[in-house]
Amino acid sequence: MDAQTPLGNAVTRALAFMLLMSVAGSVGGASPLEPGRELLVVRGIGGEAFYEDLFHRWASGFVESAQDVLGLDGERITYLAEDPTRDPQIIRGHSRKWNIHRAIEDIAERTGTDDLVMIVLIGHGSARGDRILFNLPGPDLAAGELDEWLQALSGRRIAVVNTSSSSGPFVQALSRPGRVIITATANGAENHHAAFGGHFVYAFGSLAADSDKDGRVSLLEAFVFASRQVQRAFQERRVLQTEHALLDDDGD
Image 1: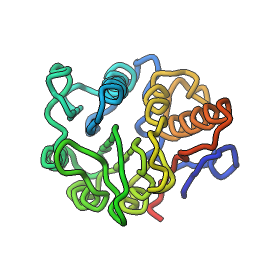
Image 2 (image 1 turned 90 degrees about the vertical axis):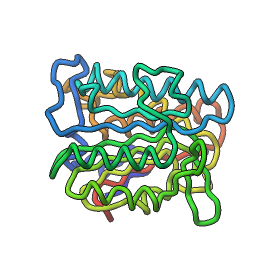
Image 3 (image 1 turned 30 degrees about the vertical axis):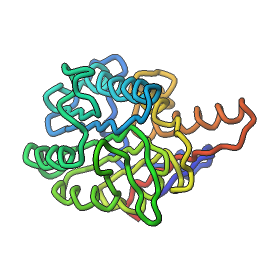
Protein backbone atom coordinates (compact mmCIF):
# COMPACT_ATOMS: atom_id res chain seq x y z
CA MET A 1 0.00 0.00 0.00
CA ASP A 2 1.33 3.41 -0.92
CA ALA A 3 0.67 6.73 0.77
CA GLN A 4 1.24 10.17 -0.65
CA THR A 5 0.56 13.60 0.78
CA PRO A 6 -1.77 15.45 1.06
CA LEU A 7 -2.86 13.14 3.87
CA GLY A 8 -6.02 12.63 5.86
CA ASN A 9 -7.88 9.94 3.90
CA ALA A 10 -8.97 6.70 5.49
CA VAL A 11 -6.57 4.57 3.44
CA THR A 12 -3.52 6.42 4.71
CA ARG A 13 -4.71 6.31 8.31
CA ALA A 14 -5.38 2.56 8.04
CA LEU A 15 -1.82 1.53 7.11
CA ALA A 16 -1.13 -1.39 9.42
CA PHE A 17 1.95 -3.22 8.21
CA MET A 18 3.57 -4.51 11.36
CA LEU A 19 7.01 -3.13 10.55
CA LEU A 20 5.64 0.39 10.83
CA MET A 21 4.94 -0.21 14.49
CA SER A 22 7.89 -2.45 15.33
CA VAL A 23 10.46 0.36 15.41
CA ALA A 24 8.35 2.43 17.77
CA GLY A 25 9.88 3.24 21.11
CA SER A 26 8.61 4.85 24.27
CA VAL A 27 8.87 8.63 24.09
CA GLY A 28 9.94 8.48 27.71
CA GLY A 29 12.70 5.99 26.88
CA ALA A 30 11.36 3.28 29.18
CA SER A 31 11.00 0.50 26.60
CA PRO A 32 14.33 -0.47 25.00
CA LEU A 33 14.29 -2.28 21.69
CA GLU A 34 14.94 -5.99 21.66
CA PRO A 35 18.10 -7.54 20.20
CA GLY A 36 18.34 -7.80 16.45
CA ARG A 37 17.75 -4.13 15.67
CA GLU A 38 20.27 -2.19 13.61
CA LEU A 39 20.35 1.42 12.45
CA LEU A 40 22.51 2.83 9.64
CA VAL A 41 22.49 6.61 9.25
CA VAL A 42 24.25 8.04 6.20
CA ARG A 43 24.86 11.78 5.89
CA GLY A 44 25.73 12.70 2.35
CA ILE A 45 27.58 15.68 0.98
CA GLY A 46 26.35 19.09 2.09
CA GLY A 47 27.89 21.17 -0.64
CA GLU A 48 27.95 24.35 1.44
CA ALA A 49 28.26 25.25 5.11
CA PHE A 50 24.53 25.82 5.66
CA TYR A 51 23.57 22.33 4.52
CA GLU A 52 26.55 20.69 6.17
CA ASP A 53 25.38 22.14 9.50
CA LEU A 54 21.72 21.34 8.84
CA PHE A 55 22.30 17.73 7.80
CA HIS A 56 24.62 17.18 10.76
CA ARG A 57 21.91 18.39 13.13
CA TRP A 58 19.36 16.09 11.53
CA ALA A 59 21.63 13.05 11.53
CA SER A 60 23.02 13.51 15.02
CA GLY A 61 19.50 14.27 16.27
CA PHE A 62 18.22 11.01 14.87
CA VAL A 63 21.10 9.07 16.39
CA GLU A 64 20.36 10.70 19.74
CA SER A 65 16.68 9.81 19.48
CA ALA A 66 17.56 6.23 18.54
CA GLN A 67 19.54 5.90 21.75
CA ASP A 68 17.59 8.02 24.21
CA VAL A 69 14.03 7.59 22.94
CA LEU A 70 13.99 4.30 21.04
CA GLY A 71 16.44 2.63 23.44
CA LEU A 72 18.82 1.36 20.77
CA ASP A 73 22.30 0.42 21.96
CA GLY A 74 25.03 2.62 20.52
CA GLU A 75 26.90 -0.47 19.33
CA ARG A 76 24.05 -1.18 16.93
CA ILE A 77 24.10 2.29 15.39
CA THR A 78 26.38 3.01 12.43
CA TYR A 79 26.62 6.69 11.53
CA LEU A 80 28.65 7.55 8.42
CA ALA A 81 29.27 11.20 7.51
CA GLU A 82 31.04 13.46 5.07
CA ASP A 83 33.41 14.64 7.83
CA PRO A 84 33.89 12.06 10.62
CA THR A 85 36.05 14.49 12.61
CA ARG A 86 33.04 16.72 13.19
CA ASP A 87 31.70 14.43 15.92
CA PRO A 88 34.02 11.41 16.28
CA GLN A 89 32.15 10.15 19.35
CA ILE A 90 29.17 9.10 17.25
CA ILE A 91 30.40 9.09 13.63
CA ARG A 92 31.90 5.72 12.66
CA GLY A 93 33.45 6.64 9.31
CA HIS A 94 33.28 8.44 5.98
CA SER A 95 30.03 8.25 4.02
CA ARG A 96 31.73 7.03 0.87
CA LYS A 97 29.95 4.47 -1.23
CA TRP A 98 32.19 1.53 -0.43
CA ASN A 99 31.85 2.24 3.31
CA ILE A 100 28.07 2.12 3.03
CA HIS A 101 28.30 -1.22 1.21
CA ARG A 102 30.64 -2.56 3.88
CA ALA A 103 28.35 -1.33 6.67
CA ILE A 104 25.40 -3.19 5.15
CA GLU A 105 27.48 -6.36 4.84
CA ASP A 106 28.55 -6.01 8.50
CA ILE A 107 24.91 -5.57 9.54
CA ALA A 108 24.02 -8.70 7.56
CA GLU A 109 26.57 -10.66 9.59
CA ARG A 110 25.16 -9.39 12.90
CA THR A 111 21.51 -9.97 12.11
CA GLY A 112 19.25 -12.82 11.12
CA THR A 113 15.79 -13.63 9.86
CA ASP A 114 13.07 -11.24 11.03
CA ASP A 115 15.55 -8.82 12.62
CA LEU A 116 14.89 -5.17 11.87
CA VAL A 117 17.30 -2.98 9.91
CA MET A 118 16.62 0.71 9.41
CA ILE A 119 18.62 2.83 6.95
CA VAL A 120 18.26 6.63 6.96
CA LEU A 121 19.79 8.75 4.19
CA ILE A 122 20.19 12.45 4.99
CA GLY A 123 21.49 14.87 2.39
CA HIS A 124 20.98 15.96 -1.22
CA GLY A 125 19.71 13.88 -4.10
CA SER A 126 19.72 14.33 -7.85
CA ALA A 127 18.22 12.88 -11.00
CA ARG A 128 20.44 12.33 -14.04
CA GLY A 129 18.27 10.87 -16.74
CA ASP A 130 17.02 7.56 -15.43
CA ARG A 131 19.71 7.45 -12.73
CA ILE A 132 18.40 8.59 -9.35
CA LEU A 133 21.23 9.37 -6.98
CA PHE A 134 21.91 10.08 -3.33
CA ASN A 135 24.84 12.50 -3.35
CA LEU A 136 27.96 11.38 -1.51
CA PRO A 137 31.56 12.55 -1.20
CA GLY A 138 33.09 10.78 -4.17
CA PRO A 139 30.87 8.60 -6.38
CA ASP A 140 27.15 8.99 -5.70
CA LEU A 141 24.86 6.15 -4.64
CA ALA A 142 22.30 5.01 -7.23
CA ALA A 143 18.98 3.57 -6.14
CA GLY A 144 19.65 0.36 -8.06
CA GLU A 145 22.99 -0.13 -6.31
CA LEU A 146 21.37 0.15 -2.89
CA ASP A 147 18.76 -2.41 -3.93
CA GLU A 148 21.54 -4.83 -4.88
CA TRP A 149 23.29 -4.34 -1.54
CA LEU A 150 20.06 -4.92 0.37
CA GLN A 151 19.94 -8.45 -1.04
CA ALA A 152 22.47 -9.31 1.68
CA LEU A 153 19.71 -8.54 4.19
CA SER A 154 17.23 -11.00 2.73
CA GLY A 155 14.83 -12.24 5.40
CA ARG A 156 15.24 -9.17 7.58
CA ARG A 157 12.56 -6.54 7.97
CA ILE A 158 13.96 -3.43 6.34
CA ALA A 159 13.00 0.23 6.52
CA VAL A 160 14.74 2.72 4.22
CA VAL A 161 14.12 6.45 4.68
CA ASN A 162 15.58 8.72 2.01
CA THR A 163 15.11 12.34 3.08
CA SER A 164 16.84 13.87 0.05
CA SER A 165 15.51 15.82 -2.90
CA SER A 166 14.63 13.80 -6.03
CA SER A 167 14.26 10.72 -3.84
CA GLY A 168 10.84 9.51 -5.03
CA PRO A 169 12.11 6.88 -7.53
CA PHE A 170 13.85 5.09 -4.65
CA VAL A 171 10.38 3.71 -3.88
CA GLN A 172 10.16 1.91 -7.23
CA ALA A 173 13.78 0.76 -7.06
CA LEU A 174 13.69 -0.60 -3.51
CA SER A 175 10.10 -1.74 -3.04
CA ARG A 176 9.96 -5.42 -2.02
CA PRO A 177 7.88 -7.51 0.39
CA GLY A 178 9.25 -7.08 3.89
CA ARG A 179 10.44 -3.52 3.25
CA VAL A 180 9.10 -0.11 4.16
CA ILE A 181 10.39 2.64 1.87
CA ILE A 182 9.89 6.32 2.68
CA THR A 183 11.02 9.18 0.47
CA ALA A 184 10.85 12.94 0.91
CA THR A 185 9.64 13.55 -2.64
CA ALA A 186 7.23 11.94 -5.07
CA ASN A 187 9.55 11.92 -8.09
CA GLY A 188 12.96 12.91 -9.42
CA ALA A 189 11.70 16.27 -10.66
CA GLU A 190 11.08 17.50 -7.11
CA ASN A 191 14.69 18.58 -6.89
CA HIS A 192 14.56 21.49 -4.45
CA HIS A 193 15.96 21.02 -0.95
CA ALA A 194 13.48 18.87 0.98
CA ALA A 195 12.47 19.87 4.50
CA PHE A 196 10.84 16.50 5.23
CA GLY A 197 13.94 15.07 6.94
CA GLY A 198 14.05 17.67 9.70
CA HIS A 199 10.42 17.08 10.64
CA PHE A 200 10.86 13.30 10.43
CA VAL A 201 13.80 13.42 12.85
CA TYR A 202 11.92 15.72 15.22
CA ALA A 203 8.90 13.41 15.21
CA PHE A 204 10.68 10.66 17.13
CA GLY A 205 11.30 12.91 20.11
CA SER A 206 7.96 14.71 19.99
CA LEU A 207 4.71 13.81 21.70
CA ALA A 208 3.01 15.83 18.96
CA ALA A 209 3.73 12.99 16.51
CA ASP A 210 2.13 10.37 18.79
CA SER A 211 -1.28 10.44 17.12
CA ASP A 212 -2.75 7.45 18.96
CA LYS A 213 -1.42 8.70 22.33
CA ASP A 214 0.17 5.40 23.30
CA GLY A 215 3.46 7.00 24.34
CA ARG A 216 5.23 5.64 21.23
CA VAL A 217 6.07 7.07 17.82
CA SER A 218 6.03 4.64 14.88
CA LEU A 219 7.41 5.04 11.38
CA LEU A 220 3.88 5.68 10.15
CA GLU A 221 3.24 8.36 12.75
CA ALA A 222 6.58 10.02 11.99
CA PHE A 223 5.78 9.95 8.26
CA VAL A 224 2.33 11.46 8.75
CA PHE A 225 3.63 14.11 11.15
CA ALA A 226 6.52 15.17 8.91
CA SER A 227 4.35 15.23 5.79
CA ARG A 228 1.77 17.42 7.45
CA GLN A 229 4.41 19.78 8.79
CA VAL A 230 5.84 20.18 5.29
CA GLN A 231 2.38 20.80 3.85
CA ARG A 232 1.60 23.37 6.55
CA ALA A 233 4.86 25.23 5.94
CA PHE A 234 4.11 25.64 2.24
CA GLN A 235 0.54 26.71 2.96
CA GLU A 236 1.70 29.35 5.42
CA ARG A 237 4.13 30.73 2.85
CA ARG A 238 1.42 30.56 0.18
CA VAL A 239 3.73 28.99 -2.35
CA LEU A 240 3.44 25.87 -4.48
CA GLN A 241 4.47 22.75 -2.58
CA THR A 242 7.65 21.35 -4.12
CA GLU A 243 7.94 18.12 -2.13
CA HIS A 244 5.42 15.34 -1.51
CA ALA A 245 6.57 12.44 0.66
CA LEU A 246 5.86 8.82 -0.28
CA LEU A 247 5.54 5.61 1.73
CA ASP A 248 5.40 2.06 0.40
CA ASP A 249 4.93 -0.79 2.84
CA ASP A 250 3.88 -3.83 0.81
CA GLY A 251 6.33 -4.16 -2.06
CA ASP A 252 3.83 -3.35 -4.81
